Image (cartoon, rainbow, N blue to C red):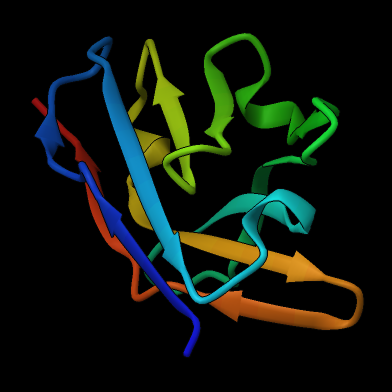
Length: 115
C-alpha cells in the first residue's frame, strides 16, 4: 500500500523559513519522480517543484531561488526547503510520487505565512 506522509507545515512570519518533509512507503522510491504541489484557498492546485532520482530538479518560476527540493533515497523521503517566505506562499502543500502514468498523493500540510 502506497503511503505519503507530509510534515513540517506551520505558521511563519514573512521572510521566514520552513522545511517540509514527505516520507514515502510502499513505492519504489528510487524509481519515482517526487514532487511538491500547493493549493491556496479558492485556487487550483499548482506545481511547485519535483526531483527525479538521477538528480534532475525542476521548479515553478514563482519560487525559483527561494525553495529547494531534495531527496534522500535511503530514507525514502523528499524535502522542500522554503526560504524568504511570502504571504502568497500560504497554501496546503502536497507531496506527489509519480512513476509512469501513476500518481500518488499525500494528505497535505498547511503552510501559513503571516505577521
